[in-house]
Length: 201
Image 1 (cartoon, rainbow, N blue to C red):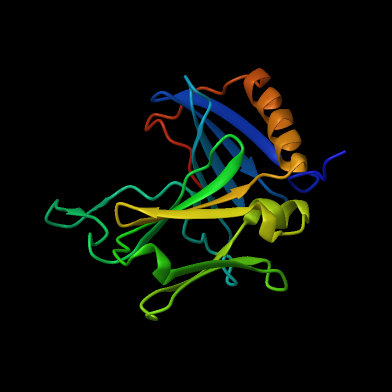
Image 2: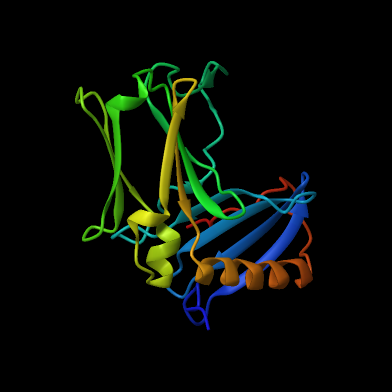
C-alpha cells in the first residue's frame, strides 16, 4: 500500500472553472496546496503551495509544477522572465516527472545531470561553469521514496535541457487513487474571481 500523500487531518475541496478542475488542500499546520488539472485531458497543469512564515503571516506561493502568471506593473505592463536567463519549469508526464530549463544554448556535451542520493536531488552542471542547479523531487520526498540514477534521463534540443525522471510504481498507484478521488468529489461553487487562493490573514 502506498504511503499517504498528505498528513492526517488534511481538508480537500474541489471546483471546476475556466476549463480546469482545481483541488485545494488545507493542511493541519494551515499550509495550503492547490492543484489544477485540465478538464479534458486530466493533465496536471499547476501545483503550487504556500505556508505560514515564522511570524504567522501568509507566505508566497511556490510553484512545484507549472509557472506563475505574468504580473502587471503599476504602468499596466506585463512583467515576464527574461528571455536570456535560464528558466526552470516542471511539467509532468503520465509516466515521468519532467523539467525543462530554457535558454541554455551550449552544446549537449557541455551538460551533466546526475543524482545526489544523500541530498535527494538531481544536480545539473555545465563544464563551462555557466550553470548549476539542484532540483528536488517533492513527490518522492512526501512519499519517502528513494531517488535512483537509473530512473533519470535527459536530452538537449532547441536551447532547452529536458530532464525526465521515471515515476516509481508507488507514485503511479497513488496518482491513480488520487484521480479517482478527484473525479468523484463534488464540486464547490466557484468563487467570483474563479480562483482558489490562500486564506487571507
